Image 1: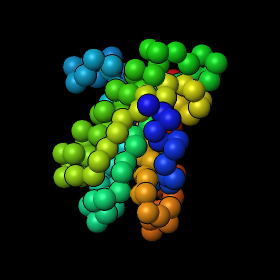
Image 2: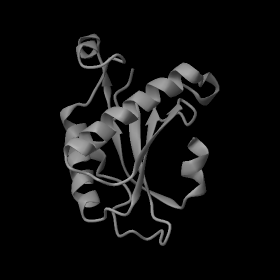
Image 3: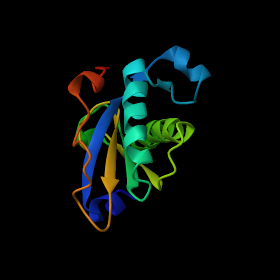
Length: 141
């Protein structure tokens, strides 16, 4: 499914860093959770997306590890991370077409979800390329 995202011209709206914790298993089966900075970043993204409902959103889930360590389990966890962010955006009222993609550790980006935007008519969507760094702090595992 990653090829769908690669075929479309896309820009990165931002990265959302997630956390892992044993106590988070109460919330979901992966033990992933959204820290406050991630929730803030997703709410900022939701505000941008409300004004542009025709833009397609690809949520790429990444997990810690080197590209050569990538496997189906890491991709599955990455997809679950993307699903958690998608649920947050939907709860914030985002109606855009959203697709979750689990890329695992194939790009070596750590535990995060990258929001990629695609519009078939234009690659200049008038959105910031990446959210501010203070909102995308990566959690080292």
